[in-house]
Image 1 (cartoon, helix red, strand yellow):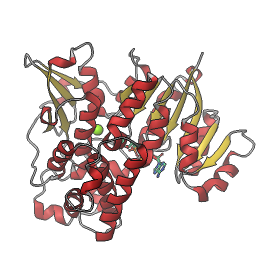
Image 2 (cartoon, rainbow, N blue to C red; image 1 turned 135 degrees about the vertical axis):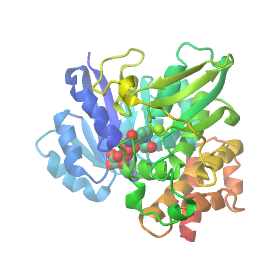
Image 3 (spheres, rainbow, N blue to C red; image 1 turned 45 degrees about the vertical axis):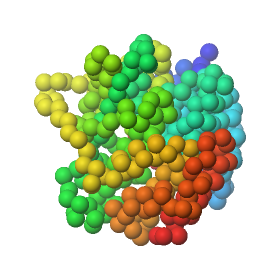
Length: 386
Ligand code: NAD
Ligand code: MG
């Protein structure tokens, strides 16, 4: 029996890499739903190639284009955030959540209710609603497998280990394109410079978040909710070669590191075949050619996002939702050239500590509607100041 699968955010970097793996063994999968946003041509091409049941665009004003592109195929077309959530509610054995931003949260929650595997690339789901999403997975017996390369690495380094003997999680970061810039140089950088990641080939938003290390800060928060450890147990180390994808230290000071080429098909393939392993098309490591691997501490004066992540973790409740939404709004402002690169962290910090936002973020996580309330309030706070 082919496995029923759906991919939300199928036209993005994670989505196309996922389909690249599926394509190599098509008869093993039965594709239920695919979703995208503005790239209708690619979404329709994917839906036809993989004979999906339904293709959904996030944009209502692109529905007619999608219908036209799918004409005669018998594939359903739909649009909007609710249609994405409804498509994610169609039963599958394996669901990939790879929409970018908090916009991916509803798909993650719906995929958590199938009792199969939720492959989670959308780290924002964990940052905004880690407790709610984990509870939903537990309630429905769904296996939550992280696809973020660091968290996939940590997960693999914990295979068969007693979680009570875990001492430290060490997340690696390349340091991004501005690792060696001065603060003065960072002030003037453009979105075009920020999007050029030295090692990983990813979507625009996560690439810029990597340059500011906001991506790593989201990953620190994601790690806490995935692995239920104390904020003080999570560290970040700069490792420009991106060969060690993360490490786990145990009480006996043994460190288990996960290594591989920087290619997301490694982590996606692991989630696809878990609990087994299968061959994949990524470049094998040649240690003699690699030469030196280096490690250093991140510069928190240049990358305040890391400090803010730890403060967010200490706050708990909806602080993650506020942090993420403020970051998303600030990132929009930077991409639109309305604010500078370093203004992003300053705005996020201002939001976290504003008297307006404090009562919202301090509530404990109880419902998705409150997550969206916190999200909306934080975006408004930032947008009013841009
Ligand atoms: P991307 O920008 O390449 O793709 C995003 C996908 O989401 C596209 O299919 C796009 O059409 C869709 N989308 C965008 N806005 C939407 C909206 N408002 N509503 C519904 N769909 C929307 O992004 P990506 O790099 O593939 O990242 C996807 C997710 O995976 C992010 O959460 C990112 O943090 C995470 N992630 C990505 C990588 C990577 O290597 N690219 C690594 C780790 C984690
Ligand atoms: Mg990552």
